[in-house]
Length: 127
Image (cartoon, rainbow, N blue to C red; front, side, top):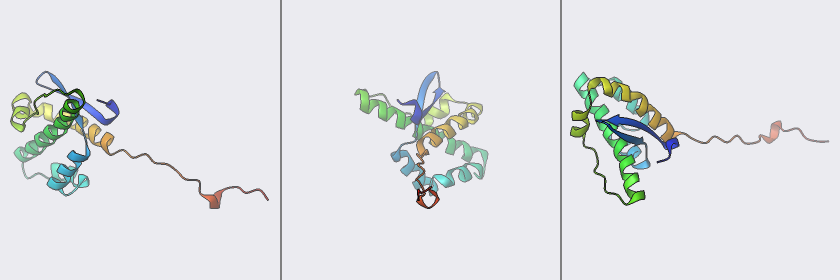
């Protein structure tokens, strides 16, 4: 997987690449009303258990994108993670650590190439 599109986390001794794909973006938008609402939802969860559920869902979604891309490219059939598997193989402290990797994957997935155009009204002209 291209590292410029992903971040890596270790769950239960196995490395997983988290990738924000178009498919994942659609799922996040359906659940939260858009990527911009994700942070608010996670921070304003009514209780700790609900916040953990959201983080586990997000980790599972992003890791499964990496697995699906790998399976597509290699012809492998590695099983997808389930939320239950992520819950069993992680501790709440680890989930907090994964926040940086989630942020990194989201930023890499949403980065935009910004090209500045020559603004002709400010260009120097020869007379």
